[in-house]
Amino acid sequence: MFFWRKNSGVSWIIVFLGNPGPRYENTRHNAGFLVADALEKKLGVRINRLKYNSLTTTATIAEKRVFLMKPQTYMNLSGGPVRQAKRFYNVLITNILVISDDVALPTGKLRIRRMGSAGGHNGLKDIIQKCGSEGFPRIKIGVGAPPDEQYEMSDWVLSKLSDEDEKLVHEAADIAVDAIEIVLGTGIERAMGEYN
Image (cartoon, rainbow, N blue to C red; front, side):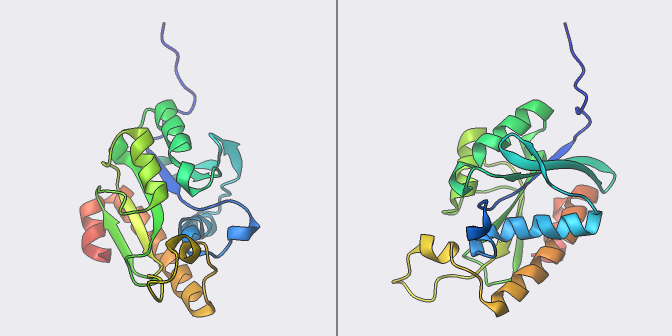
Protein backbone atom coordinates (compact mmCIF):
# COMPACT_ATOMS: atom_id res chain seq x y z
CA MET A 1 0.00 0.00 0.00
CA PHE A 2 1.26 3.50 -0.87
CA PHE A 3 0.68 6.63 1.16
CA TRP A 4 0.92 10.12 -0.28
CA ARG A 5 2.99 12.47 1.84
CA LYS A 6 1.44 15.86 2.41
CA ASN A 7 4.81 17.65 2.02
CA SER A 8 6.19 15.52 -0.83
CA GLY A 9 6.24 18.55 -3.15
CA VAL A 10 9.60 19.69 -1.71
CA SER A 11 12.27 19.43 -4.41
CA TRP A 12 15.20 21.04 -2.55
CA ILE A 13 16.55 21.13 1.00
CA ILE A 14 18.71 24.07 2.07
CA VAL A 15 20.78 23.52 5.20
CA PHE A 16 22.23 26.50 7.09
CA LEU A 17 25.07 25.42 9.39
CA GLY A 18 25.79 26.98 12.76
CA ASN A 19 25.63 26.40 16.49
CA PRO A 20 22.46 27.14 18.49
CA GLY A 21 22.15 29.56 21.37
CA PRO A 22 23.14 33.14 22.25
CA ARG A 23 26.72 32.13 23.10
CA TYR A 24 27.46 31.44 19.42
CA GLU A 25 25.71 34.42 17.82
CA ASN A 26 27.98 36.38 15.45
CA THR A 27 30.77 33.81 15.63
CA ARG A 28 32.62 32.71 12.52
CA HIS A 29 31.12 29.22 12.63
CA ASN A 30 27.61 30.73 12.44
CA ALA A 31 27.97 32.31 9.00
CA GLY A 32 25.39 29.81 7.71
CA PHE A 33 22.85 31.01 10.25
CA LEU A 34 23.50 34.61 9.14
CA VAL A 35 22.56 33.61 5.59
CA ALA A 36 19.36 32.07 6.98
CA ASP A 37 18.58 35.40 8.69
CA ALA A 38 19.13 37.27 5.41
CA LEU A 39 16.91 34.81 3.53
CA GLU A 40 14.15 35.15 6.14
CA LYS A 41 14.22 38.91 5.68
CA LYS A 42 14.10 38.71 1.89
CA LEU A 43 11.33 36.08 1.70
CA GLY A 44 9.32 37.33 4.68
CA VAL A 45 9.36 33.88 6.33
CA ARG A 46 10.42 32.56 9.73
CA ILE A 47 12.61 29.47 10.09
CA ASN A 48 11.18 28.58 13.48
CA ARG A 49 9.28 25.27 13.35
CA LEU A 50 11.06 22.50 15.27
CA LYS A 51 11.44 19.37 13.15
CA TYR A 52 14.31 16.87 12.73
CA ASN A 53 16.24 18.56 15.57
CA SER A 54 16.26 21.72 13.46
CA LEU A 55 14.44 25.01 13.10
CA THR A 56 12.63 24.69 9.79
CA THR A 57 10.08 26.07 7.36
CA THR A 58 9.06 25.58 3.76
CA ALA A 59 9.27 28.36 1.19
CA THR A 60 9.19 28.94 -2.53
CA ILE A 61 12.44 30.04 -4.15
CA ALA A 62 12.84 30.35 -7.93
CA GLU A 63 9.42 28.68 -8.30
CA LYS A 64 10.62 25.61 -6.39
CA ARG A 65 9.25 24.34 -3.09
CA VAL A 66 12.14 24.27 -0.64
CA PHE A 67 12.61 22.93 2.88
CA LEU A 68 14.82 25.27 4.91
CA MET A 69 16.60 23.98 8.00
CA LYS A 70 18.96 25.22 10.71
CA PRO A 71 20.18 22.14 12.65
CA GLN A 72 20.12 22.72 16.40
CA THR A 73 22.40 19.78 17.24
CA TYR A 74 25.69 21.71 17.24
CA MET A 75 27.92 21.79 14.21
CA ASN A 76 29.63 18.40 14.43
CA LEU A 77 26.27 16.55 14.55
CA SER A 78 24.57 18.33 11.65
CA GLY A 79 24.38 15.19 9.51
CA GLY A 80 21.65 13.44 11.53
CA PRO A 81 18.98 16.08 10.92
CA VAL A 82 19.96 16.36 7.24
CA ARG A 83 19.66 12.59 6.77
CA GLN A 84 16.21 12.59 8.42
CA ALA A 85 14.92 15.37 6.17
CA LYS A 86 16.46 13.75 3.08
CA ARG A 87 14.71 10.46 3.83
CA PHE A 88 11.34 12.05 4.57
CA TYR A 89 11.25 14.27 1.49
CA ASN A 90 13.06 11.74 -0.71
CA VAL A 91 15.31 14.48 -2.12
CA LEU A 92 18.38 13.63 -4.19
CA ILE A 93 21.74 14.44 -2.57
CA THR A 94 22.40 16.82 -5.49
CA ASN A 95 19.37 18.85 -4.36
CA ILE A 96 20.63 19.43 -0.83
CA LEU A 97 22.33 22.84 -0.73
CA VAL A 98 24.51 23.41 2.34
CA ILE A 99 25.56 26.88 3.51
CA SER A 100 28.63 27.03 5.74
CA ASP A 101 31.61 29.10 6.88
CA ASP A 102 35.07 28.53 5.40
CA VAL A 103 38.33 29.56 7.08
CA ALA A 104 40.29 29.00 3.85
CA LEU A 105 38.52 31.95 2.21
CA PRO A 106 39.14 35.64 2.95
CA THR A 107 36.45 37.16 5.16
CA GLY A 108 33.34 37.98 3.15
CA LYS A 109 34.31 36.04 0.01
CA LEU A 110 31.87 33.49 -1.45
CA ARG A 111 32.73 30.18 -3.07
CA ILE A 112 30.18 27.85 -4.63
CA ARG A 113 30.95 24.18 -5.23
CA ARG A 114 28.98 21.41 -6.90
CA MET A 115 30.43 18.83 -4.46
CA GLY A 116 33.64 18.09 -2.60
CA SER A 117 35.34 16.97 0.56
CA ALA A 118 34.68 18.39 4.01
CA GLY A 119 37.93 20.40 3.90
CA GLY A 120 38.28 20.07 7.67
CA HIS A 121 34.79 21.46 8.36
CA ASN A 122 33.09 19.30 11.02
CA GLY A 123 29.55 20.12 9.92
CA LEU A 124 30.23 19.15 6.30
CA LYS A 125 32.14 16.09 7.49
CA ASP A 126 29.16 14.83 9.49
CA ILE A 127 26.73 15.43 6.62
CA ILE A 128 29.01 13.48 4.26
CA GLN A 129 29.31 10.66 6.78
CA LYS A 130 25.59 10.43 7.65
CA CYS A 131 24.32 10.85 4.08
CA GLY A 132 27.04 8.67 2.57
CA SER A 133 28.05 11.10 -0.16
CA GLU A 134 30.12 14.21 -0.92
CA GLY A 135 27.82 14.94 -3.86
CA PHE A 136 25.85 17.86 -2.43
CA PRO A 137 26.33 21.48 -3.58
CA ARG A 138 27.46 24.09 -1.11
CA ILE A 139 27.90 27.81 -0.71
CA LYS A 140 30.82 28.74 1.52
CA ILE A 141 31.18 32.09 3.28
CA GLY A 142 34.76 33.15 3.96
CA VAL A 143 35.53 33.94 7.59
CA GLY A 144 39.31 34.18 7.29
CA ALA A 145 42.12 32.14 8.78
CA PRO A 146 43.49 32.47 12.33
CA PRO A 147 45.97 35.35 12.65
CA ASP A 148 48.83 33.02 13.64
CA GLU A 149 49.68 29.32 13.96
CA GLN A 150 49.40 29.40 17.75
CA TYR A 151 45.64 29.99 17.46
CA GLU A 152 43.56 26.82 17.99
CA MET A 153 41.17 26.43 15.04
CA SER A 154 38.24 25.61 17.34
CA ASP A 155 38.86 28.81 19.31
CA TRP A 156 39.04 30.79 16.08
CA VAL A 157 35.79 29.57 14.51
CA LEU A 158 33.92 29.98 17.80
CA SER A 159 35.24 33.50 18.37
CA LYS A 160 33.09 36.59 17.79
CA LEU A 161 33.49 38.48 14.54
CA SER A 162 35.13 41.88 14.82
CA ASP A 163 32.95 44.83 13.80
CA GLU A 164 34.69 45.04 10.42
CA ASP A 165 34.48 41.29 9.77
CA GLU A 166 30.86 41.19 10.90
CA LYS A 167 30.02 43.83 8.30
CA LEU A 168 31.79 41.82 5.57
CA VAL A 169 30.09 38.55 6.55
CA HIS A 170 26.64 40.19 6.67
CA GLU A 171 27.24 41.64 3.20
CA ALA A 172 28.32 38.18 1.99
CA ALA A 173 25.16 36.68 3.52
CA ASP A 174 23.01 39.01 1.41
CA ILE A 175 24.96 38.03 -1.71
CA ALA A 176 24.62 34.34 -0.78
CA VAL A 177 20.82 34.75 -0.79
CA ASP A 178 21.04 35.96 -4.40
CA ALA A 179 23.33 33.01 -5.19
CA ILE A 180 20.81 30.56 -3.71
CA GLU A 181 18.14 31.90 -6.07
CA ILE A 182 20.45 31.42 -9.05
CA VAL A 183 21.46 27.88 -8.00
CA LEU A 184 17.81 26.86 -7.76
CA GLY A 185 16.63 28.90 -10.73
CA THR A 186 19.20 28.63 -13.51
CA GLY A 187 21.68 26.14 -12.07
CA ILE A 188 24.89 25.86 -10.13
CA GLU A 189 27.16 26.42 -13.15
CA ARG A 190 25.69 29.88 -13.65
CA ALA A 191 26.04 30.64 -9.93
CA MET A 192 29.65 29.45 -9.88
CA GLY A 193 30.46 31.59 -12.92
CA GLU A 194 28.91 34.65 -11.34
CA TYR A 195 30.17 34.42 -7.76
CA ASN A 196 33.39 32.36 -7.67
